[in-house]
Image 1 (cartoon, rainbow, N blue to C red):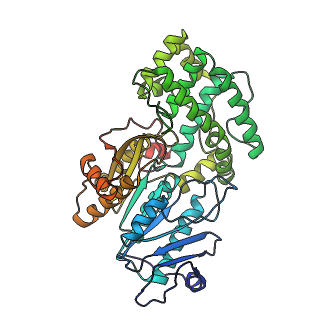
Image 2: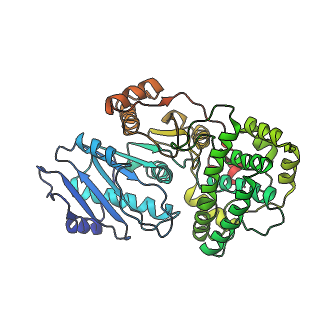
Image 3: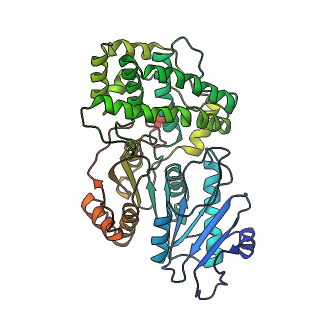
Length: 461
């Protein structure tokens, strides 16, 4: 394991940290140790080191937290997973990031600073793994690509591994479709908000149009079309009964629920915060052929059937989308997002990604975008991907999470991936016999609009 010297300032903070259980002083530890404190950036950190530390430290990157929301440090995806790992001797660390929102430029240095502090306090780990969920999957993969010398392997769970530009493009497409088809004469802005109040007014105005459209067959068909452009599956929440494969109305109702959430948060409020960091709008739909995009979607059949039931010509709506005035990116904002939040695909250590098949927030097709990047960069053999057959975002069981971690460890120990569903399910059952595991064979559809640094055509955009 290669590492760089810890920072002196961090060493001072380590001495000042207040232990929740018992502090140690570099000698043999006879008690579990929990440290909490602040990094120089202001980010909080949390470290748990069991007395019988097994030599592996796990650096956890948490998911997106909206601007202004509580921002505690977190070092595991769930209390149950944390307890199981500590019982097995793993050291768990993580920071809060100095700011909330699209905080990639804070998250990466804060996570590295947390690792520095851990090394100064407890010594160099025998093995260092980075792992993260959701937006934390982007943070984890950025650490893997840009700071590979600090880690032995990485695990992304339900991660935003399509990168920032692909994410914001994919978030633009459904709201563009909704505005064009449901509010064609409105002046609802989709980008370039003056502030959060303006973003929320736009979200509210479009939500009102969508709520009214949901009451008619034609409106429901158009909402399904918008959902298809984002890749929202028809079963995307564990609270939803699973519809039959051709129960188009029930599947559309589930998509409407998820699309309403997209309008309330990511498409407007979260976008405005990201634009404020980038200095403008980093996404576009100039030159996009929405007819071709829909035909590539796994939801194409559903959309066509709902249009037939409504008696509305799908071809006319697609023509309306293709001739509507488009949204262009601000060049400087595009450069900022490309420089901070876009993946190269270049891995130097093994990375395992896991994803639920019914994810509406970060659709499973994001894994196709990451595979595309890694293959083009020559890192395909280092990347393994596995899928859990279930609805929801990051709805992994404790057993499924631990199985993924142990699969990464097996790859590091043997040089071979054993990430097939049967092996993962066996590991999940061993880790948590009380819950049936759900790993399954799955091949995601292509991501609608991938963008990475391994494809020169993307970078020249």
